[in-house]
Figure 1: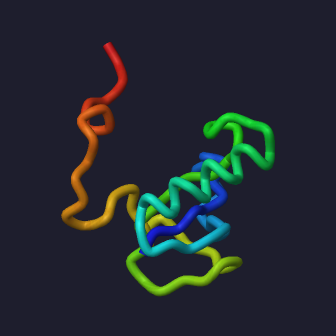
Figure 2 (figure 1 turned 90 degrees about the vertical axis):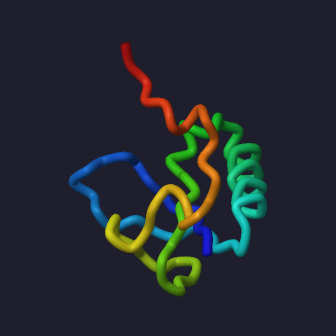
Amino acid sequence: MYALIYDEFDRSKREKKVISVHRTRGAADKALEKRQHKMDKRVWECSARIVWVYNQVRTGDTVTPDSFDTWAPDEKIPLGDRIPDGD
């Protein structure tokens, strides 16, 4: 299951609030776009990201890094996300 989580990218804040839950990455992408337009901000300014959650969660729950990952098991990772940024 995919979730849109609130993430300020602060390592000291391990618990992340679940904004919404989705069955597909496509549905989660649409929810993120909708949030972006509603807030009138760019994606990276929305403090939200899409993750694959290992266990059942609901909107409003909190998750920790050990209960989610950026990609679902066996999900094809886009080439641009497989190459690290850097020199």
